[in-house]
Image (cartoon, rainbow, N blue to C red; front, top):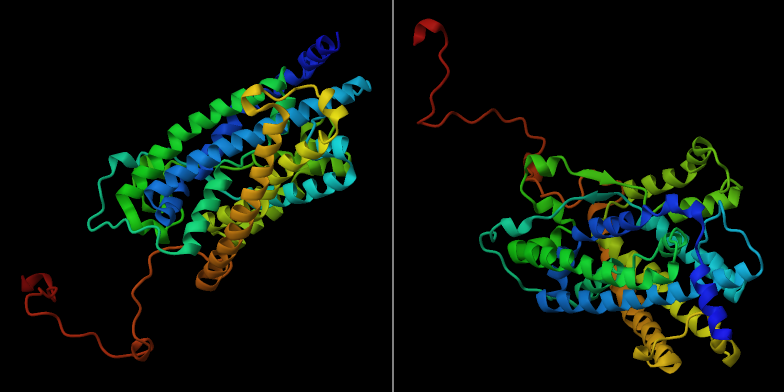
Length: 412
């Protein structure tokens, strides 16, 4: 009888008619995720090499799907507990920090909120959506594929891929918009497989075509040939800001306001700092790596895995869990082992080595280009020697085969 009650409660999670209007956010999340990383994955391949780039994409794709599954379990657990207490979520979007608060307390909420908001602030830079059709571009003359060359570049590229499959910033908000949020884990796995069909061929094709040139062009957009379609590429901005908007609205008491104009005006204090940071630090690829190592690693991988471990650490909590682990994962023992592996791997490889390499690369970008640079990674223009920079010498005489302009029409 108890298991029957659990199944009924699980099915009832998220069956609000009012949430139906928000369901269109789901595919947009996957599109935003694909658009941003398509331009930087070739840069990662040039740092990692072809084989390592493919392996890391597959590995982090599975790891990202696992943590999305963990977040789904925690969300369903939290929402079911709150609904037992007669909580009403109409006109209220549940967010990740609220899940942590309800299951583990204020300390976990504050840590998750701090990391998540910082991640969203830096991760909401300008994103250029461009369908990379680089398989049509032939090999650049004299192209070289020498990656990996340096340990710093290797871990920088790896953390950029870690960021690629760490797009869980809006996971809870998307689940909240679903009628049956417990199905999100399978949807996310299919979405990850779909993302791999886009990112793997595109990144491999661009790296094959341009090779080591990508080491100095973190945004593959800069190497694509000019065309009308390239010039019509548009900027997508704002989807990654959505959770940050909700946090800000709740902080100032505007989240349940029904006036869209008032809510839009209230979001301006969030938009302005993001645009300012995008102008100060236009380092598209290095920012992805830095955010991936220092923020995404904690927000998306470490905190969910640890939260699952501590939420179900007691035998009573495991017995009364709304969703029991699958036998394919080894039940509770296997789930704990996988969570511990995720925490240790990401803490050492992602946050440790990745953070070290990304910060070195980020500081190098600042030293090379400075802040507020007008043209990031643009080709260097030829400059006159210092002793000729201010010279006032006359123009050299015309060459022997040059044709001077006629002095008058009668001189022809």
